[in-house]
Length: 114
Image (cartoon, rainbow, N blue to C red; front, top):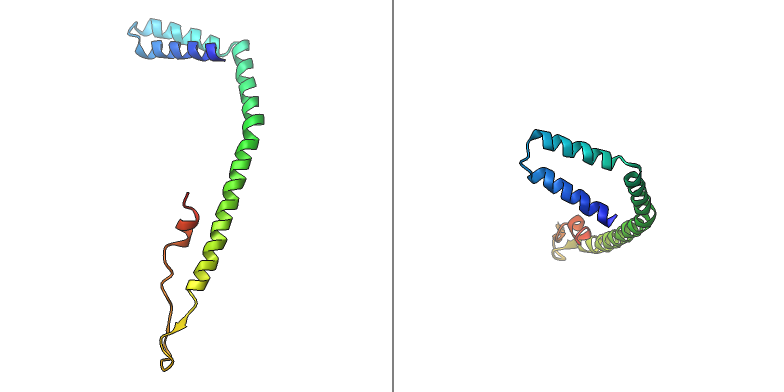
């Protein structure tokens, strides 16, 4: 796949940088299309796709699962802290007014912070 990628990069660079005119561009485009659609190249493409599915999918699933666990832990911790902070308290024994302390920073922002 390394040599093929290198050759494809060279061809793309040449197509993008060449000033050989429309005929040369059309010729290069035709040849590159034939190469891309050839059986050996498509076999390598299919192999790469399958490898990505089988090797990358479990890794991505683990990363997503770990991130979800961390977010849930942060939300639980924030909910506990917020509920303790938001408990109303009396200003004084002689007053009937209740004062709620400020809730602090946005709990969602803290829970989702990396």
